Amino acid sequence: MRTSKYLLYTNKHIVHSKQCISHTLMLQAGLIRKISSGLYIWLPTGLRVLQKIKHIIRYEMNNIGGLEILFPIMQNEDLWHKSNRFNQYGKELIKLYDRNNNCFILSPTYEEIITDFAKKQINSYKKLPILLYQIQSKFRDEMRPRAGIIRSKEFIMKDAYSFHMNKNCLENTYHTMYKTYIKIFKKMQLNFHAIPASSGFIGGKYSHEFQALSKNGEDKLVFEKQKKKNTNLINEINKIYKKKNIFNQKKYIYKNFSNNIKIEHIKKIILQYPQKIIKIFLIKHNNQLIGLAIRYDHILNINKIKTIYSDHNPMMFIQKEEIKNLIHHTEKINFPIPFILDTHLMYLKNIIPIVIINNIIFPQHILNQKFKKIKIKNIITLKNQKYKKKIHINHAIEIGHIFNIGKKYSKIINFQINTQYQKKNFIYMGCYGIGVTRLIASIIEQNHDNKGIIWPINIAPFQVIIIPMNIHHCSKIKTISEKLYNQFKQKNIDVLLEDRNERKNIIFSDTNLIGIPHIIIINSNTITNNTVEYQKRINIHIKHIIHIKKIIMHIINDINNHM
Image (cartoon, rainbow, N blue to C red; front, top):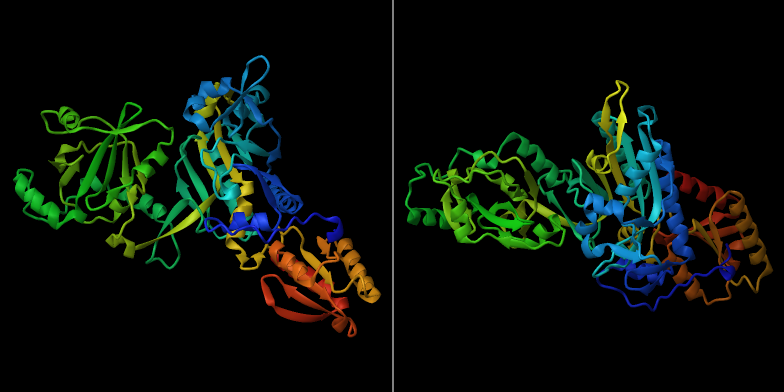
């Protein structure tokens, strides 16, 4: 490609955004242009990057037997009503109507429609397992789009769905997808972490998020400082919780404490040992009682609770009178309710058997110990607390999410197949998503300097740029440049020849801004010795003088080492 025939669309005058450097650089480097809130045009340079990311994803998906399909972006509303997600998604669901007043949905995801499709096409266990995927535009009516393409109204995703006759087969595919995602993100040279996560609107038995570290990310990852490797705290907590229930601790810091102790003494203990006491909040959500457990000296973050139950339905704290009505004459709350335990309760040792429920003090035996539905989440506000010495928090961007859905959608759609023993079984499913457009922002967040983007070699819009100085005034420089340019093309190397009649500072500014990994400069000083000046974008200040006959192989070797 020649710059004189190419639309760079660079613009250094776009004001830097303090909130999101990737958004600023994508606008300045001419990758995207905004047409409305949350809506962007992908320009030629951005589209080249997008296509290379899709290529990596397709290669790895095809490598594990994935079959690519393409669904329409519009879906009929019927299946969404059947799964009850029409109401769950709320105002983020974009709806439109045809001339007959039929309602359609601009797809945010495809669980219902692909299950319905598979039900109509797969009629024998012999056709399973099968893994279908697409790379398609998705839509959500974001109230406040932010950070450019990180949170927008239209975005591109790779979504995949697997179908299985039994649970073991699904778990094997889930594990394969987990490893495949790691391969994909490593090829893009991303610094990321895979963590257990909430299944949210998708649902299912369990799920994992893939989070790329970025100070502009919306999500927060908690790490233990004592670990040599940054092991995610949530993984550790899940392991700990299987071995002990925090409500059944028997070692008390106050040895003489008993259930009959006077309330005045309890208050003194609370003031003396607030970090050893559990504080519980009872809330109502969708007419269901939910318990939230945190340390007494910590502050509940209601916004985090809303994120966990993100269906836009209101939450209300239970009043004192209601709590008293819930207490039986046995002085126990004898009904199963879901509980969310704050992650930091897992650090507690020697818990004092006092429970504070919505600011009412009770002895610990007030709680029925047979809790079944327990989630472990970070639900507090971090604010000058002692445990900050034990952990550190990094912001991150969610770039992928995989789900063990199980039978949720096959039961909704009534998708059953006869086994080899002629017994009908509901199909097991997995769901696997990658935020394709988000990946580009995440890569830029981790790879840039004050001059612009620094692309990894396998996703750069161009791998090499040739910059001939005074190409329009020196025939020898022009001849050498054209020869090198054609040789790179013959080797299938993405090369850009800078043949514009522009000032030197504009040419180098654009080159650094776009982030092309390999830079070849040809000028009158070097060609007298049959050499060129060579720079790598990642080390722009280091210059090498290389013979013209060796420069191509030098770059090819470097590309092969980083692919």
